[in-house]
Length: 363
Image (cartoon, rainbow, N blue to C red; front, side):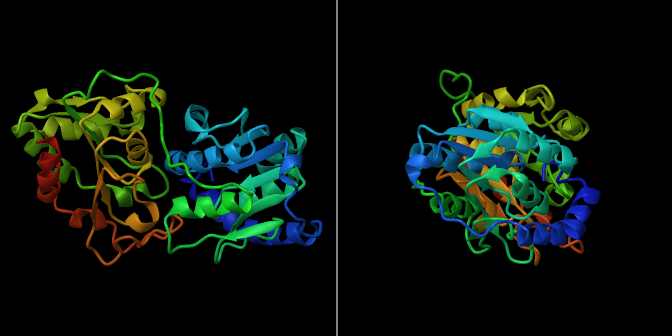
């Protein structure tokens, strides 16, 4: 959901969403076949996920556009992914839905008229399938996800698998829509710096639901940054305005503060790909900025605690992944299966080992 950090909305989505989606499926039309390719002139895309998910989706939308080059593609986004959608996704129009107001969102969708193909990229939120049930379309496609009770309204369901990377789940979905799959997530920065700059970009603060479980202890960041600055390397800290207090505290604790620049809240999202692209190295927890660094093809060190590398790792051959070693490491499948008895899984990652890997890349 767009408001995926809102626990009340998540609870309502589960309690009311499953029976409502089931009822919507009961009263829908008989399942229909995919229209002939030449008849698909308008495609509706529903994707209200956050930055990282949308970066992955952008690749398969390019595949879809290649399969239907003349079709109008209308993207229905949520509040959290509208900006990144405008930056990187192929679309003719973007409509931002108020996901916390399903009645209003449904009216906005219906106002857009009829589509020949509708694809819901949400793997678990029932609100997405309810909105899909109200869309006017000749063919509706979405995920069937174990235990989520969201698949009743689609003409064709694609199994959302927990044993493969999310990129492959997305590819399975668009292949069911008649597209081939050859693209990987790529972002072209608004501008390109001349050569890489002499700094390492560090992104410490994850976003989303229960994001604190994906945070590394600030003392680990200080240890890592001190090792880099002791070797003469400059570090820039990235983050949202809400992250400023945390990034300032880490910067103030570093041994060489003159080599640490805190840019949290100072770099707009549209300019961040250029900053990451110009970096010699990006070090990030598993969050949307990690996927952005992979998509601009910058050397990357990614830190994973409850987030599984196999399911949610960066799509990049320039990435070095460090995984937690705690019992709950890699427990996330859809993004909410946290082990609340183990909130410090990330701290089993040794900062000195990460520093050695970073110095090896920067050598």
